Amino acid sequence: MIISHKYKFIFIKTMKTAGTSIEVFLSQLCGPEDIVTPIFPHVEPHRARNHRGLWNPIPEIAEKKAKGVRRDMRDFFKLRKFYNHIPAFSVEKRLPKRIWESYFKFCIERNPWDKTLSDYHMMKDRSDGDLSLDAYLHNGRFCLNYPKYTDLAGNLMVDRVLKYESLMEELGEVFGQLQVPFEGTLGVKAKSEHRTDRAAYQDVLNQNQSAVIAAAFQKEIEMHGYCY
Image (cartoon, rainbow, N blue to C red; front, side, top):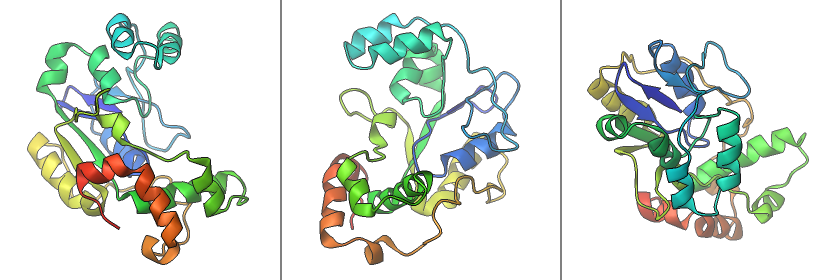
């Protein structure tokens, strides 16, 4: 997650959408007062800054009620004000209102079938290759991104959701609007080593597997018009 006072934007990081590569690129352009959260594992030449501090957790906890309160309090006592993949809902509560309302907010989303295959390959790699696609799908731990950029009622909280499928073109539009220097490439492909098989998802998934993914990502499919 990045909050740039220099360029007046807030980047909400989603999963399996080139978010780390974007953070590495932007961290080199951000000013000394900007907020850049750490990346795990670290990727050079990324530099985190200004992500720790105190905030008033009461408005956030009151709206969430019981959900996520334990984590919020743990973050509060550890001064973990902003962190990797923090949802927009929490960012809004932890920022001055004038900043949240005046800065341009954006994130990235990806075709859920393709995104699921990417996440599966990462999980398989982390389990030393001992994970089948069916076992991954059966676990039900999908990389749902919409909670990162919607409020608790499911309403969109960002100004623009860029499509991973046309990422460089859309980043060019956003960075041009924000006057962020950009020459059409990020210069880094972080975390791309997990997936060596680049076959199209239509050639990998069977009918049952595609149906499981469609059911899990129904909200994102409806929001962004993705289709198999």
